Amino acid sequence: GDVERAALAMPAEGPDDLAARKSFLADFIDSMPERYLLANAPAAIAAHAELARKHGDRVASVAMVPSRHPEAAEICVVAADRPGLLAAITAAIAASRLEVHAAQIHSRSIEGGVQAVDLFWVRDRGEGVDGVARSIPKLVRDIHAVLTGEVTPIELARRRGGGVRGERNSPRVRLQVSVDDRASPRHTVIEVVTRDRPGLLFALSDALYHLGLSIAVAKINTEGARVADVFYVSEAGGGKVAPGKRSLEIQAGLLAVLEGLEQEDARR
Image 1 (spheres, rainbow, N blue to C red):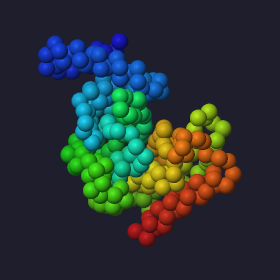
Image 2 (cartoon, one colour):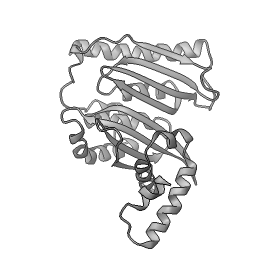
Image 3 (cartoon, one colour):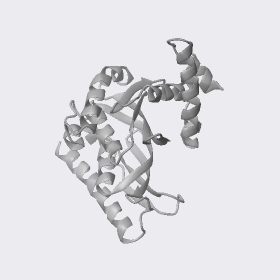
Image 4 (cartoon, rainbow, N blue to C red):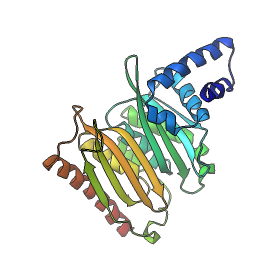
């Protein structure tokens, strides 16, 4: 199909490389959830698969891939899935002065475990799409450092440089956090509505990690100053979040993080 044609159009190192690429692509497509295949263009899927094929035993593989959104560059990160992985990656993104406008979090079963294939549509805070390519070497170093324990995610996120993008002048957005245990048969769905700011996705994913939750799916949507982020989560043991006390604890924890960010903005 279109994905295979896109994959075979990439430069090859010989007939054996083409055959290996074609075989891996078929396995990659079979291993990915249907929502991934519906949400991504053939050229991007082929690029994601090629990054995963060459991943080997690296801590993480990171690359810019064809973006279907002209207003943002697409970055693909392939790594062994683990609790806190999204927080680690988004800490590095924040440290590189990149703003996340959308994201898709995926995982697939492979021999030896579970592999994450995470996609982020980003812009450089100062230079927009044009500045993303220059940020990739630093982003790769930072993702490696945080995943190997050289630095903690919170330390890395605090290193983000540059000014803050006019937060005080942007319109207010009413904070909303909902915890729904009925919207999905296997996961609890958490929706967060707030004002966009640098490092927001890191702050939310780090909070969910410290609340003991595992993120299976993240849908990140930015519309102007307003962000509506949806997380499909489960408890560490794999079950849904219990309604009542536990749901209220999670809601209160996320609201506390968001209110803390607003207080930081007010002090700037």
